[in-house]
Length: 323
Image (cartoon, rainbow, N blue to C red; front, side, top):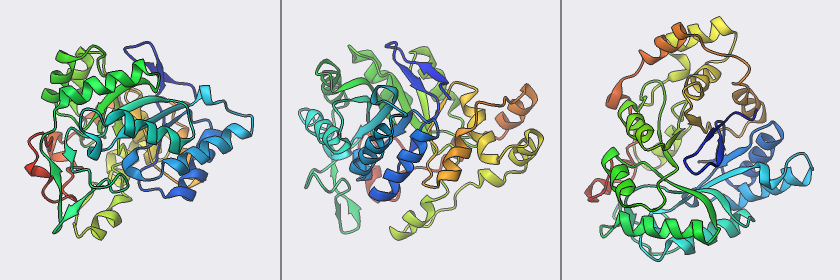
């Protein structure tokens, strides 16, 4: 595969990665190993996912085959909301690195611009009476200064943010010694993030698209939390299907190709080895301008957003809540 973007610090980041949200330990270990052996060189996880140990086992198993080296793999993890205080960043990054069985990560992201109360290191989403327990003292600048230290300590090669608003990105950029290299946000054909992409382009910040296929598997998770949600069905959109038929590709391949063709990094999640391999085959064809224009036309702007963190009732009370 090998297709990558150059970050603002000169580091190269593969355009295709495996997303690991909602995948438990043994399942994610097998998925990570399958992805790396299928040619993926970018793995995206997070402290909040509670599966970094499984991700680490998958990386170790793939490296043990001799077909891939650690230095070839771009590993991303994220600072949890319970670690959003000055002085806590190093603790949580070291915990992540230990769980992953690594010496460093290639990219460390602030998972979201808001803080949750740190009741226990093993409870990233503390709840009281059905509402998330917030820490409203979040100071994004002091957290970012701690993030910068992770680079000087050699624990992270690059640092970035996730789920920030354009104003929050500008706040970080204006006060940073090391600017964010990457901003990870929801991005797909229905929610193309045009304004955010413009801001990030101005400051040479790469965009990673999470939920590039709209993350259809999360409906069950939301319902377990008592939240009913209608998710966009991108895979059955008539325009997407027509473009897929034209190129003799799957709808998922077209949705992913649409983004990577614009230098947007994608991290589709799957634990099915066949699907992982299929999703990875996006560099052997190209969409023409007519295809691209038809897919651009599907953009719904803000109405296309489907991730709002509303599965954590009360989060909207946080002064830095981005949604």
